[in-house]
Image (cartoon, rainbow, N blue to C red; front, side, top):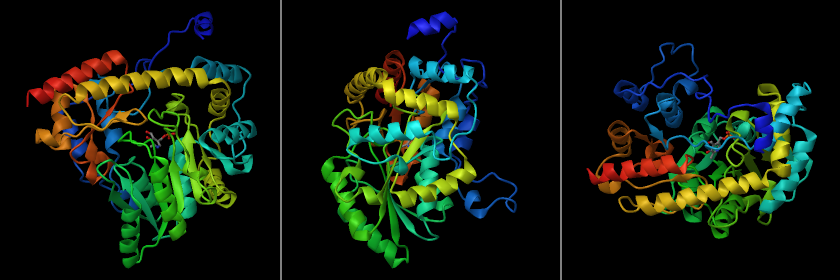
Length: 429
Ligand SMILES: Cc1ncc(COP(=O)(O)O)c(C=O)c1O
């Protein structure tokens, strides 16, 4: 790996700021106040669509903008792996670029990549063909086109919270109704809750068309066992709903092996699996993901994708082929490091805060309820008093109030320093 790097004589950097492309951060109190201000600042109300006008900006992104490039702040805020893209993947992409491969691909994505994805997913219990796979510009796009392909105006999507920030806004933009609900204290959805919510929604004239799930979960790190998946599947079958299953952290499962909900009997035909290369292979900026879906849904997604995106970047698709072919060793190394960090974080932070041991991903979701501070007060004071950035739990839904999300996608050295500062902060309250 390093040999190729040395031959080129290139100094490796960790992020765009280090490479000289980033602006310095601007984390002052005023910016921070603005970040949490829910008020809409747009002056051109008449020019902007009402649904967009009503959207709240993503709490995480704004946070990221604030602290970008600030060397004095340790950020456990953003869910971005701190590992560079494995060298073998870079090498394939560089080689492709040298050959001048810079064209569009098929709207579906490179055939070879789709084939690799179809056989890769056997690992998570799913047998599918190339015709079930579309390559997208990250899971972000895949969530969007899946919801737009499924929803008619006014149809509902059940969204268990706390959850990733895009599900509810993208449901709204697709013309649907986001029916968000709090999960159990262990952060799992239950059949009873889903039935109750669906009944209430029907009472308001909203039919539940889809169920959104994400496991291992951002922000809680919780994953779903087979019995939880069976409850979701039972509900979906009873209600004839489609499950949109965001499995972007599938490879980063530590407590037990990841199983796709689509592998449960009868579920393939009513599941849209979303996954990608950003997290497991540390390829965030390369923007490549995929969806696996029954053909009718997939073709509907393709129609939207071809108009709004055309195709995922070709070089990234070439890198993704290499990731699936030969990336397992790099992945294993990163996975082991995340486990080490998780174990360290949980053990030390439990001395001052209550936290559930994450099953996967690279997030922990400690409760700050006992400190008497709200999530936002805690995050704000921690940032300004101890220069550690975490995301307030309510950025992931109302029931995230009383928690903070800490991403352990930073080096062990930084993580240790950050945790000591958090412990000091809580003990000083
Ligand atoms: C649960 C979840 N889904 C989707 C995404 C977006 O991933 P991508 O980089 O593939 O667009 C993220 C990124 O943080 C995520 O946590």
